[in-house]
Length: 334
Image (tube, rainbow, N blue to C red; front, side, top):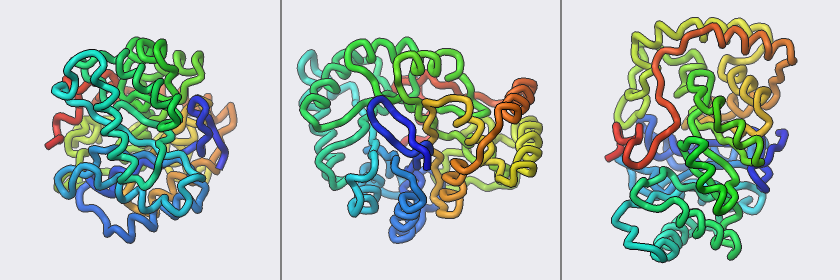
């Protein structure tokens, strides 16, 4: 696979979101299947894997996903870029100077579960408005100097919030929701990140599966499946957004690719600093998504697709500006 950079971190141009092996998409597969799927992604050429300390709610326990990913990646840990995220509760902050010890405990626990002595990319999962972001950025700078992490990032932030953090300690990557259906990042995040050599790591780049064309009004989202709360997947919005699927179908037929692959190829063509991390618990879908790296659009094809998308109205919107106090995840977090 071709490589891209997130700050000073070189990664495959498509990464892998691992959350679904622990929660968020209904019943999870057996551990052996999950480990094989992750290792199959590596064999395909994926060198960028994403997890978080909180992944494992309901069916398992927080930290389950890190343990699973750590076990899967252990044989080739030094050949991959491993990203995880930490969450800070307001009660953990008791005043200036306390965050270093608090974040160090989070980091140590994640490293133990991940079977590693360093983290390549360490994200603040959501900004907590009750904890000074600039102080967190200072701690991240210290951890980078000490070699505990190689880079750090933020998730679901606006450009103004990103700038506050970046001015203290340079940010390697921003993980925001971005797809053909969620394009808020195009206004400020991508321009800012291009200017400051920051990578953008789109999560849900296939719009929770919508852009694959495989999600219909008859699709049942069971258990802890977060897609039951995604506004674009309501029956009425599925019908209203059908023109986008028709457009993708036309291009996928012409390019001998799947609709999901076309949506990822569009993203890779549009922004040189975009590294999407589609998530799936299905090995076949994982390899299909990674296969988008082998689908290229000509400038003319991209322009035609971009213009056609611009003429479509998207129904249902989530947005990128989330904090711990105002987060989409509050709909399903337990």
